Image 1 (cartoon, helix red, strand yellow):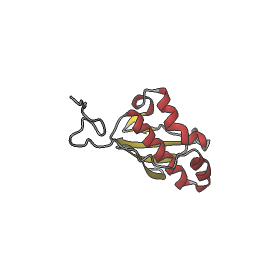
Image 2: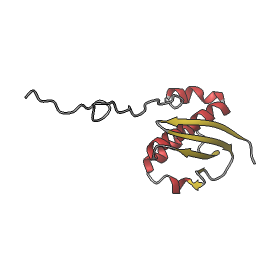
Image 3: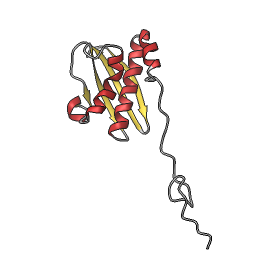
Image 4: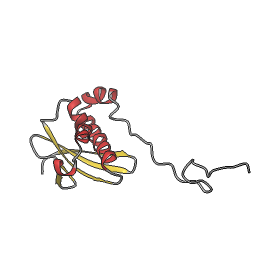
Length: 129
């Protein structure tokens, strides 16, 4: 198998294990071609954003194993993993990726439900009488 750069991208509860290869090849996610796994066009832009910033979208391909959360968060996790892999592969890409905010992990998660409340912060209706 060819030499690759490995990194882990995360967003909410989604985590993506990214293997970035040089050259021509078909990018896959969980063993499926990219077009079959991602159906929304806006998510294609999210996934390919780091590669387009570094002008490597036609010179590299990737194999991703992603789990957790759903479409949007998984796409953001893949983009985070690709950005980290590009940074590891060539540190000259760091200023461009850092300026675009691609290397920063979005640590926001769903807040847990508290006892006595309906949701994390929503309280039951209150009436004086």
